Length: 256
Length: 216
Ligand SMILES: Nc1ncnc2c1ncn2[C@@H]1O[C@H](COP(=O)(O)OP(=O)(O)OP(=O)(O)O)[C@@H](O)[C@H]1O
Ligand SMILES: [Mg+2]
Image (cartoon, rainbow over all chains, first blue to last red; front, top):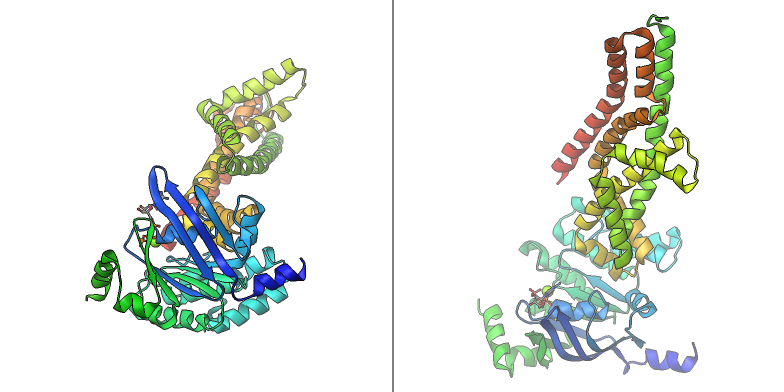
């Protein structure tokens, strides 16, 4: 489009994600209650909170894996409404799941090449080049002709990260990316994510890995019962939480 | 005049066996196309179409195949559509196969882990790309044992065409048996031909199932 909108879109002050009064129900259950959230371009946001508090629901609304009842979500200047805007937003928002969700009938390389070819309309040569570079980046290029089932959990999750990166999204969403992993594999995935954080990409990460939060987060938000209860920079959040529920929660996860 | 059972009679049976093969092949291929459509409609977001497809399946699974063939053979002429026995049977078996394959494939599509479709959506893949590259390759592979199992049923089902007078293997067996007065030998031969076709398929299906079970 014209250069003015382009400029304002790219300027650092423009929020990458805006959620305004978002409400979400599962049947009669009120899963998100009047959620307001603004994420700046390049910001690293960590979301934590007890099980069932709506963390997954919140980030799944951002790429419309879940619809919402009311409110407004704008991603990279695109308002999320039914129809074409969903496709446009999904191109710009990558997601990494707790259960990896790699395509089991495709090799690692094919997993990474599919969306760039079908969505970005790259040739297979271009897509392979991109895929190889990101697989290199997550240090797994030596396994790229294997099938997901032949890899360890940590390796699969790194492939899933590479697969999302191959679309060159402006935002990366992570939904508890390390909680399905054996303890010895958590570090390799967290290290990969920490290295990504230096790229300037906007990242939203649901995690209880407090070391990760301290290392990369610009801001931590705490959710309970479908609401954002508290938000603060990681140092403040961990050392001086204001809310009683935040303190209880932190006591539970840091206590042992 | 009573014929003796000889080379010519066996040739008649083999000739007719080709029609059994052709009928099964046509019904399976056309039924696969129809079944794929049914399965995709049944898993789609379009409620009205979904219910229509469900009704189709209920009707074809809930009535005997022979009745279906009768209705098509005697019913289409009432609509001023003239059909010979061959066309009527081919249509009947195709609809029958569409209903069964549609139901088999619907169930494996629905059994796919939700995360697969979600990951595909999150990557920006649209419905057809998700269906062609993610859903169907996995769902059809999972359905392979039961699909081959159904093919065996379909092959045996073609024998009902004999009743409305189409000369496939079973009908040819009746003709030869009437001419030679050797029903036992003739129908043993007929049975052996069906068996030679169906048993390897059943065995293949069984092995696939075992292999998939082990892979899990
Ligand atoms: N598909 C669904 N249908 C009905 N209720 C749902 C559905 N998905 C989630 N919920 C409910 O919504 C609430 C929020 O779920 P959500 O998955 O967002 O929580 P979470 O904070 O991610 O929890 P966890 O830490 O266990 O992943 C929970 O109470 C959950 O039971
Ligand atoms: Mg969750």
